Image (tube, rainbow, N blue to C red; front, side):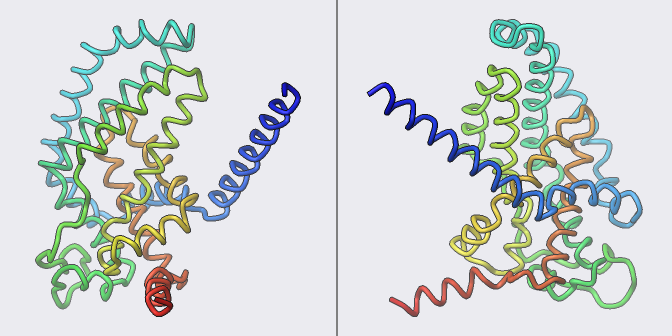
Length: 284
């Protein structure tokens, strides 16, 4: 019995290692993890894309400073004491990452709900227009004629697609927090799980412009899970940077739009979910 259990454990570990290798390889080949960085470069070299952020700069900086100061003042030491029991000398690093992650979540919750939701939509759409994807953007808002300024072409929104923080998302986030008690591996798992959720959310506007149903979105994300997770992990890491989480929320939005534009340009079978749905219905 003991030998059989050991063999089962060995086979399970081997399967998991192979699965991780496969997912990592898919993520690397997709290149999706580069888009948050491309978003930074594009954002910095295109002043017109920065206007939505600049219009909310004062309020978002004030919010970020207030939240981070509060979290480090009242939560850092208690959490460090707990993590020291599990992580020893590495507790300082783990606690900083944990506190920054918590601060980032609160900042994003408050800012996306009250300050920057429309600005992020404008940034995403403006980036697509600047990449000559006006027809796609016109599926979700009015487009003004004339002019070279992509932001100036944006008219009235038809819908606001970006997902607000739901109670489920908040509960899931705090469920993942205990992973940080595990040295190194736990923090990596925490970031990966956060990235797995964040990646698809970044393309919420793209899915809406494509007019995909929930089942079509799920099919597309499932098919490209590794790419979305790799994008999400890099995006989450950037938004953990102190005092810059809102800035990176905008650059990550630009990166997501650049990725969407490249998908449209390359014709990466973005109609596949719709065709699969139609085929499934035809078989019934």
